[in-house]
Image 1 (tube, rainbow, N blue to C red):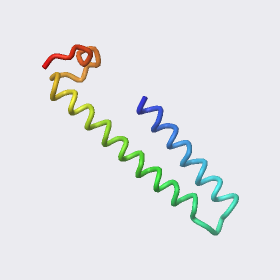
Image 2: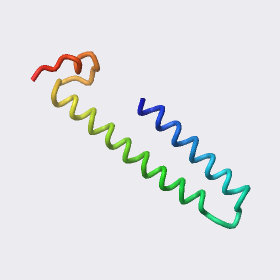
Image 3: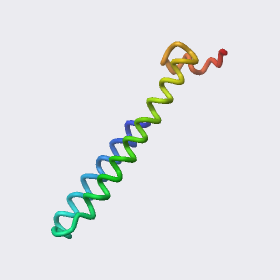
Image 4: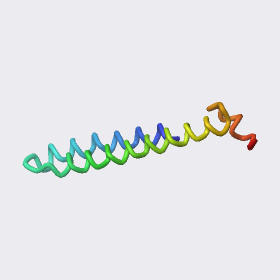
Length: 72
């Protein structure tokens, strides 16, 4: 699911840069939006890594089937 969100954000970046180049070649609005989206994507990746690390610390495995068994 996180990978699909990442792909959608990257496609939006391409659209912003392409629209900026053809509609407003003298302005950098599309580039600034793209940099903002890249920052959001980096934060999303950091949250995903934190979830994986927490899962590994609690279950000693990153297998999703092991996560269904709530052993403490």
